Image 1 (cartoon, helix red, strand yellow):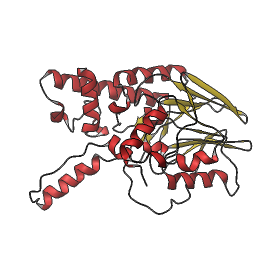
Image 2: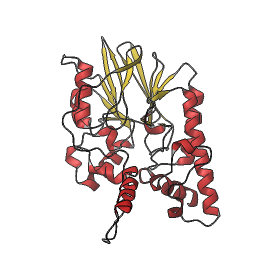
Image 3: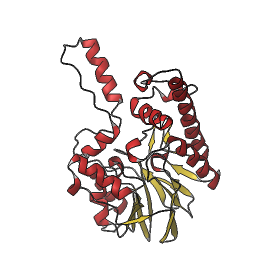
Length: 312
């Protein structure tokens, strides 16, 4: 089951008055609540065997519950990027092993959020190395303490700041840190020979993002980071994203990084204009960002940290 810390970090709980609701008002409020909880899973039985989606040279991705898992599977290397939840992590591990008892050479967490790290309890014991940015263990522990789940987590055993690189089989895996963005500790993972980059939650592909202000996020630096990453890679680089809109694969090109940048830039401008006009953040709930109608209404989990950053 999902660590309750993730619920705390992804949502803002509202206490409703006990007054009776009409059927129409009940349905409306239920829809709003559901929209505010995009990553909260229901209790489920063991996950079915997932489909491995190859990209090139043994690198691919797996969807399921939570953030997209990236992988490298070859005759002499087995790597996982992110871990989702324990049930889906076990299903992915079984698919990667394909009936063997192979160990993972490497497990990477792109950041600390529970939909990317709760499955560490399954993948980390099966991995020779477990790496994340230096900020991740502390952020993950703080969330676990708040939820009372400290002892039910598995934390990265190695950390880096700047760049980390390791040869795994005939592939080189490089981790890069470009500063605070979605959180204070987002890693960009590059499979160098395959030229595939896992962006974690630095790209929400054509959908509303989560901005973790409490976790050290900075929207303005996020915008700059996307431009930096765009400049480091080429049009032949394949990208894997943490989340995607319904009906879209969590993959794309570096042009999709600029689409995310443009959304965040327009969001900041729209929020700044409304704040300058005297509107308080609650009045901005459901804001449609000009030029990005297809991304849907912007919820308070996005509005509040953006407004807080602009008014600091």
